[in-house]
Image 1 (cartoon, rainbow, N blue to C red):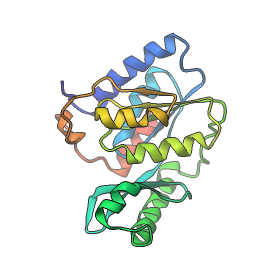
Image 2: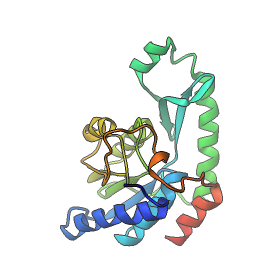
Image 3: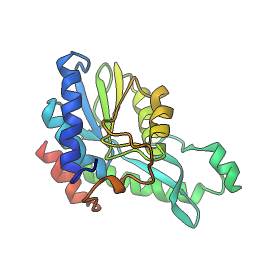
Image 4: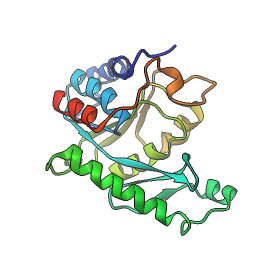
Length: 213
């Protein structure tokens, strides 16, 4: 199974969530996209439910000189959520990552300003908060997002992705009230391998998704 693009993946995911909505399992939903890639998926989910759509900007913390290798993530003004086991394996300390964290926090704030266009963050208390991304590999950004959401008093937290690594999905079961993922391939190397079109999205693409929803 492969998805044609993020829009099609979003429709497949929305169909599963629509069944939960019909069972009254998603009262007062709000959809939070993890941009950039999650915005195109989340827009389809928000239209199907229907539900308000907003963003939750999370930035991966990459290892020095190997930025694609995630060792943690940050969101909002909260301290970085770091993988202690991975840091120990790489011989890294939180202090050594301080310049990386500061750089990513600057980019996080820039994106928040751009995507919100002056809007305040949404009120999550008492709502079913559905966190959506285009896939789940290690789960570091999703874990940071879910902990951020849980600190804001939601009635229920849901992680929803079209495809994910089974081990990572299982590990996040303790972070959310519900994990929804239609496709869990046993052999998983990257999210992009399960899409025919996995082109990088731009800030304008995120804004178009938010405005369209």
